[in-house]
Length: 477
Image (tube, rainbow, N blue to C red; front, side):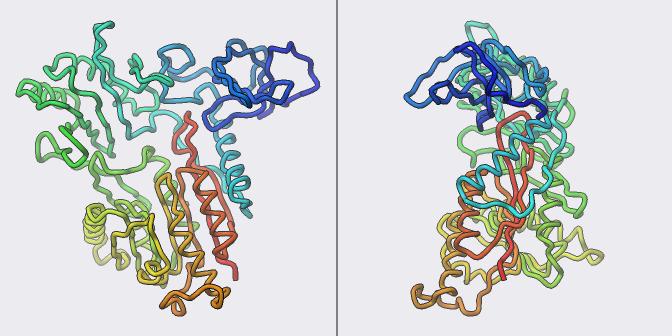
């Protein structure tokens, strides 16, 4: 940012000088007595007035009412539903901040978390991974609500800090073809007998197909099913799935037809998935993320690699094009079965003309890892870790325990089999929560014998405060 804070300037006592941005994309300022003020809608280096609506002993929270000095990084939001006004969509928080500045803020969040929470400073800061800022959100859960007072059905994200559904007619972070469905979906639900009992639509876009999962609280009438089929016939590439109860109840409206999938062309990988499976929201960034992660992992054809929290094989299968042997580990037997299916498919696609490593998948409770389980799964030259927001604390703790046993076998009773087990020389850790990454980095660096050789942010969710990141840990020799 080109702006500079000049704290020697004199302002009226009710004006606030914004110094930084927090994880909720709120401007952070201080009153003369040192009290922190969080201001929605304010940007770093701006001088603003705010309406304070919440007060505590050590902090206050308010909303910007006037900007007396504007940041050079403030931009016109790209979506008409973004803002601070009543009824504004709460799906994005940073559309008023220049895209480059958004990336800089998130990079700072990552570095601050690593240092303040983990006392870890990477040897090298990786260049941020960026991609399209609009039309990137290939997964979303959209609320549906019949609002009697407005005489209409609303289909969209929730309003900012509210349980109400925003009155959205378009959404610029959704792919254009999905944004164009918002008003037709309103009309569809309005015409259905189940208008009052369909609370949400979950969408998942593949490379060529868009799946819409309709949650319905009561059985759908034959007339409603006919309306859904007619909607899909009018909108090419749309496929309806139904969810009468929990996730286990999700099923395709009509069997047959095209399969939901995405490709990783650099590695020749084809990934079928179901609309309720976890896949990355942003496929453009995912391709770059997989590519960079594997370059950093630097798996060789003589090496064994373990992919912890492997999911459907998003990293496991590309690794199989590089390494000698791969083990994918996930917490669910059902998910492991799906991973095996994807491996068999891609192994067959590779045929005899392309290297594809021996790959196994096992189910483990990764939140209750122990040194014994690590040893049972065998030594690996390298690890890739891609956990959920909770992080991989039990996994890295188990690794640290084995390291401490080797350092001091008298004080730490060695685990059976530890003498023949060796730790990975490199770990690539992909994170969707910088706080848990920092916590786990603390264990790896200060207890497990690694150094953080590099780290960087991944802008998976432009215009939001969400920070995705990655870090590389190398074993000290």
